Length: 273
Image 1: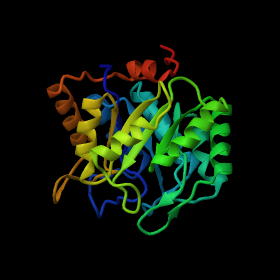
Image 2: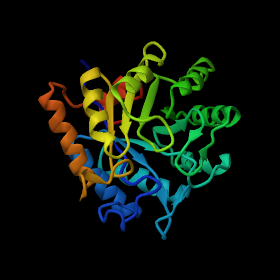
Image 3: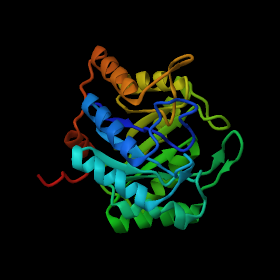
Image 4: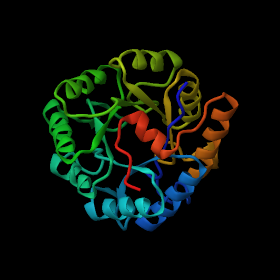
């Protein structure tokens, strides 16, 4: 079985320091936290921008600061979010591409969340994919539902991606598809031939998703974006969540991929030495 790629998602759009004091908010806090996770075994960092009031945003200067800071202290793969919680305006959602990350998230469908509709129209999906292609940024296809494999496949057919197709399977969001091994297997079975998949479990589903992904040949994302607790009622730190996956993978006989090994798996070019 190929080596395990670990992605760290340090802050996301929703968690605040009031929810968990370990959530990094400023670019400096993000860079320090991501470096710790890199040292622990993570090879990809997934970056959300926040303003001075901890609110989610699409500030390109924030993304540039974190991407450049991570590159200065590691050879980690940088991935920015184009998620819609800050704004559904497509121009706003694409601002982070100015930071020239190696990867960017691309939600490939609409679904219900607990309090709103997460809207990603076919027109906007293809717009985001084309913009990433023009900048040489690899998309990570975000799948909250079984039907979302469809638009991931359409993007691949249009030639708007490169390297190994990379799908992020997300289960446990309130209002969307809940976690179960059967749901995860159905999502994996819907992917195009040759695709690789990453797993996100929200809240208590994080550890269960990670375990199944390690055993079934997928890859793992952890972090305070998706789960602010280590155990019930006990706040986690990002590095603790990475270290737990590393221990679990070793117990299950799966080696951890370095950033350059992850690039080879994903079909990304290696960084200049």
